Length: 268
Image 1 (cartoon, helix red, strand yellow):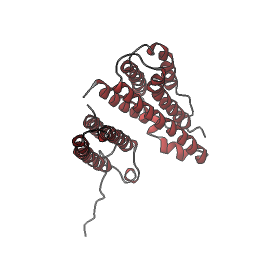
Image 2 (cartoon, rainbow, N blue to C red):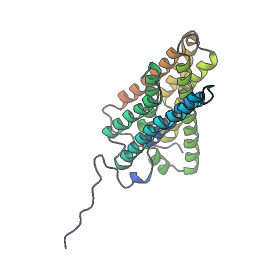
Image 3 (cartoon, rainbow, N blue to C red):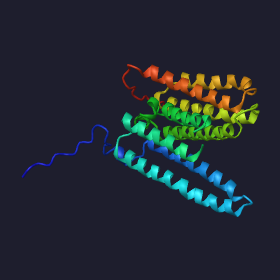
Image 4 (cartoon, helix red, strand yellow):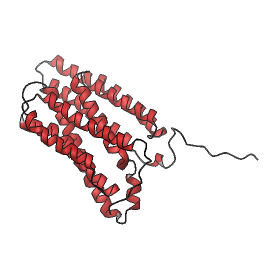
């Protein structure tokens, strides 16, 4: 009888181990879906309080018409990420384009939409760079997995809170792109990225046992830019926050260029 050759899962197909757990690329796409659906619900709720009966019924129709394509795109992308490896550049590009499509379908192709998309992509890139890639391995190598798990959990809570701050800042810039920026608005617009970077620096500490200087510089830059940005419009403040995240992502890429992947060295 002939031998049956094992199925090879190299290249862009997901391996057996990868298929057992969700990766950050999938979680990133799910987060954007929630953000997009929240935008749809926000607009629908406003119309539901309209004095016009016709407008209220149209808002329900609008929900179905817009939510169905969002969910179709989500299921299609989920199938792709479940079958193919998230480490493939082509798959990453497909998912990033899909997330941009989600945002386009959920809101009006404006400047703040692009800023929101760039913020989301840059946070994903900053998270995934090195520490995010070897996080599971670092926890496995840790001498105290319970302590490492608690620290990783705290880091992720900070990063999620920072992501929510970025989303709220985008809403502010969308609603009030011009005029002066109120201090509370600025605290959200710049504080969101700062809290995200703080959580990411904490993750760097547990995975590689070092302080992430680039993240600390980014946090310091955001604080230093806060006073003059009070006199600037919210759109400029949001653009500045994106510029800081972009600078960190570019610095990460330059630091990694030509170097082999770094092995984790957990702090605990």
